[in-house]
Length: 467
Image (tube, rainbow, N blue to C red; front, side, top):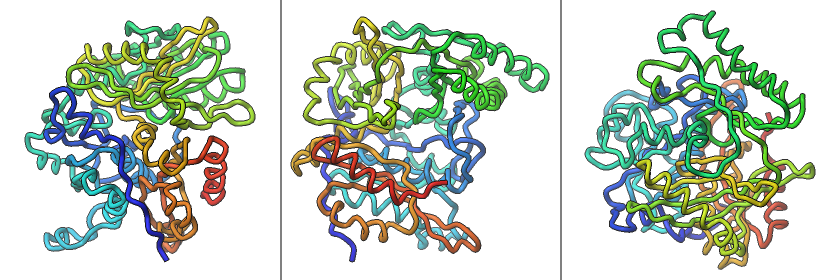
């Protein structure tokens, strides 16, 4: 028997935030997709050419899996906080039939998955979901001003809240090195080839070797980043020679692809480089902010790291009881960041990672000028605290056997309590003859304190499919 899920009411939505300071959330539409690594994974979503992205640390998975993660569950959970605005999602797979009648009557499974996710929200906070079967379908947005997770080629020429080239530059890890913000000492290794030269294999090989040499020769420890990556998949922390060897092994192939991505449409955007950053002591804390149409900085949350027994980063969580404290600690830096991105032409959601140096000075080690993965946590404070839970974390992507019904049956008590909230879900089939059913989920996990939250996460992780 399926559990009775509580209605989820968010403290605020993107609709509300875009309506502040003279804005109007009704004028905005949200286009949501996480750019998948590798080749095109679905007919609806062409691989970006102008706005190129890197994915060196992504696991080697099939296109079908990446489509279900990047266009399915991950896209859904990032948009869970959209509110009552048009939400454009990309079809994970094409309609089963190309006939006009079929397109009107048949609802693909991934669309039903998304509808089920958003049905948990209060009716006044549900997005108006519109699926795109082909890139040209975006024309249905008309004159609506669009926001997107990252700049996309198919949105060039559309009405947008932020110039996509400005957005792309702000997302680049390269840009932070030149920003008027306190950040670690950084060395930029730009690719030195023009768009006409990247078609010559020998030139590309020589250039990649030159770029790799910077990593080979630099004294440890330090951090290596590629310019455009999401989910921490473009960051390498080099503490010893084993870390260096692992980094070089992965980055040689990725840097080759990155250099080859230079073309006449993006050469001026500096899409190919390596960022070598000084390593600071301690652990990062993540700020989630919103910059209004007038440039005002709105505090959403501060996330703290989840550390394993080796003191390695294993995710992030929000402690709702400590938010006032963190706002007092990081409020000045948050306003400086917001002012900087606003002066560059950006307004909307963003995240920043902050670390302290040996003198307790705050450094911005990363800027994510977009909706972050942990953004939703700060908007669910009331949902959890009214249920006696003071901590929450995100668990994604969660790969499990079976469908959502089976998962809900297993965790019915926790779901009914509101301790678990499914904010993204898509399912598929695999194995010989597609006889095996699997699901890819995104969950927010709450707990009375960090220990109970982690215990719940461990219980869920115990049923995870491990490749």
